[in-house]
Length: 282
Ligand code: PAF
Image 1 (tube, rainbow, N blue to C red):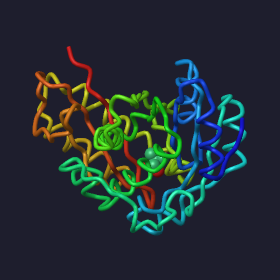
Image 2: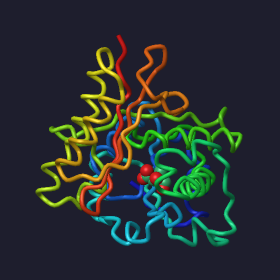
Image 3: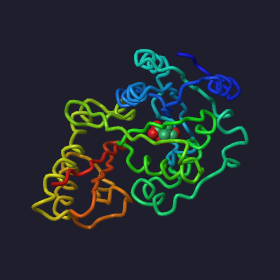
Image 4: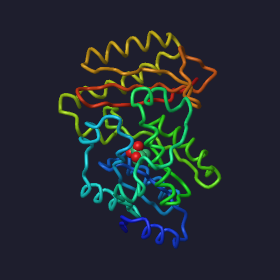
């Protein structure tokens, strides 16, 4: 694996490469969810480029930014094991040479202000800023993201369109990787205490129960039961929502004529967890 930190070097290297590029943008604290994206890109026959950059502009909460886990040595080990080809490790001045304020932002419309956007104001603006810049630095043919960040995947799909790159970059959304008890893998999980960790699969259990009720109950009943269960276990749910999986338009009840996704965000102590499930339909 070759490691680059600067724009000129990575561009020179990638411009000379003859293979197509599969890009996996990350903020580090890597886990099997991330390496599954690298494996997928390798299976697709691509040169794999992973970036690690903890992007300051997407943290609406400064505490969350300060506490974001950093584990570069272990990350490099994982990337070597996964046989990643290139690691890009830019610093803030490489990503934002003119400062964050002067960086181009994109308008994602309603998508930006619902669910995650409503609870994390400015978050997707920052995601758009950094991913646009990383795309320009890496010049990928394929971009790999995990379904765990369902709304982020839609935002980045839209970003690719807004950048006019929809014919050049294909977005591949890969399945969420879960722990044995169902907890979606996330860099933030490593901040969970033992007791929080033992409760945290409740979110997944809620998603499963929402799916199982699709044919014989109303969504509001399923939602109420989930909120009650989460609260009983000590969570502070922010949303338990049902939406159209193609548009993220909110649904007040199950609608078998649409592809549906259930989405949950909940705090346990000072850690905010999100997860989602696309509902299987009969
Ligand atoms: O999902 C993440 O890790 C980040 O939001 C991303 C896509 C790397 C942008 O900073």
